[in-house]
Amino acid sequence: MKNNTHDDFDGFTVEMFLDEDGDYLAHFVELPNVSAFGKTPDEALVELKVAWELMKECYREDGVSVPRTRTATLSLD
Image 1 (tube, rainbow, N blue to C red):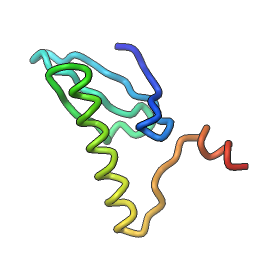
Image 2 (cartoon, one colour; image 1 turned 30 degrees about the horizontal axis):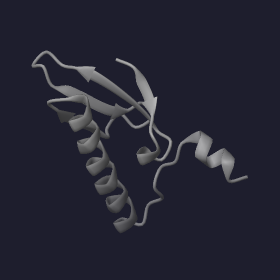
Image 3 (cartoon, helix red, strand yellow; image 1 turned 90 degrees about the vertical axis):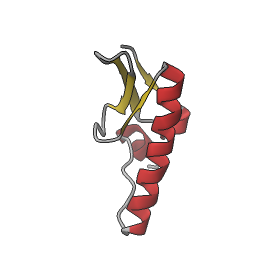
Image 4 (cartoon, rainbow, N blue to C red; image 1 turned 45 degrees about the horizontal axis):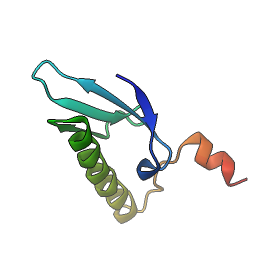
């Protein structure tokens, strides 16, 4: 399915697939371990947003820098 970059996802590219069970899987191209399922594309994106916020919280709690896209990194210079 089509790739999109969405502001809710800090510039990461979101890729979405329809799986064999009829559910949508949304994940970050740059961070494929951040993913979520939904019955609709919109539901998958909502769940991906929740997963991303939880991942960022875990990074912060562990004292690790939250990953950034190359574009976001370059714009800080």
